[in-house]
Amino acid sequence: MGAVADRSYDRLPEYNPLGMPLDWAWLRGVGSEWGVRPKPSARGLTMMDIAVGSYGEVPEQPQHRSMAPRGCDIDGETPDMGYILNRKSQVWSENVAELYEEAVARQWSATRDIPWGELRELPDDIEHAICQLCTTLSEIEMIAADLPAKWMWRMNHDFVEAKMFLCTQIMDEARHTEVFRKRALANGGGLLKSRSGASSLLRTIIEAKTYTQASALMHLLGEGFILDVFRQGELIAPTDVEKKIFRMAMQDEARHVAYGTLHIRYSIEHDPDVAEEIHEALDHGEGVLMEFGTQPDLTTAIALLLAGSADDVEEKGFPMQQAMAVKLLTSYLARCERAGLNRLERTLLPVEMLGIDRQQGIPAA
Image 1 (cartoon, rainbow, N blue to C red):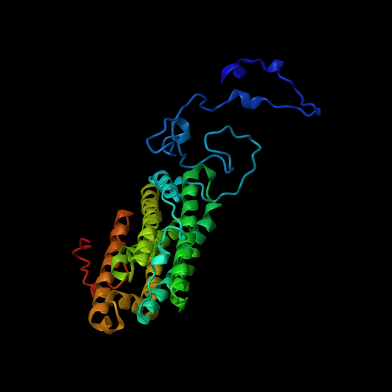
Image 2 (cartoon, one colour):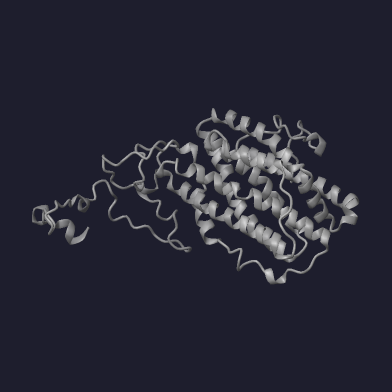
């Protein structure tokens, strides 16, 4: 602490020039790890680099419910913030600090990083189809911002890395809503049809009773479904502009799904009883997803984009869409497996119709 630490407290003034009493207790550094020097990595000083000593120890159940930084000396009179998510298993994932660093390093701009000037005129059927898809995507993307905003302020501040990551997710989803809204309007098309299926899915996610249920519905089911749609962007996108949009959005969604998958796994490993409530949420969520995923506007728009024209929808588009549906479903079931949930025997999704044998297990992607 240098020369200041060696001074006698008796030699320090007791009052300021206005006569107010002074408190020099902060000079003592009681309970702190003064002298700890994190070493920056090749990337700079990351959240992983500063997780040294007690500063890197995230308690399973913090003693305080204040916004005091984890590792500092906390005044006993610090007010209680009323957090309700006070167990690490309720919000944590082992990869959350790494995902935060990746998120802040890979932020992109829907204004500058998409080659809007390269958009070319498309046939009316294709422009209508991409505008319908973008209408649906701009509607549903913001739920992944609304949901973290609903729960973040209820999380104990000792889990600050998780809260910081969710802040990046909110920014990501705002940008996704922006980019799909811009694409719907940028090429002379417009925003088209919204139906009840999308709203039912969004309401199911936002009204989940617990954060872990909400995370399963959003990250394993909802965002996982959209991530897999983005992965098909090379097939769906009519131009390089849409391909760039899908690629950029895909890298963001992959982070969100990675957090949610490992959060669910961490939660089940540390509280096995939570598995059943997650299953119950997914039982309901899968039914709502089926309603959303089979709505005629979305399915016909994707089939038309896969076919490349209205003339080839029946012969080419719908078979390609069926194959895509198998990929989406198997990816979801595999994601659940990674999260510690065996959904194959329990899922309400029509796996047999898609050629999946419940006894043989999930086919390789």
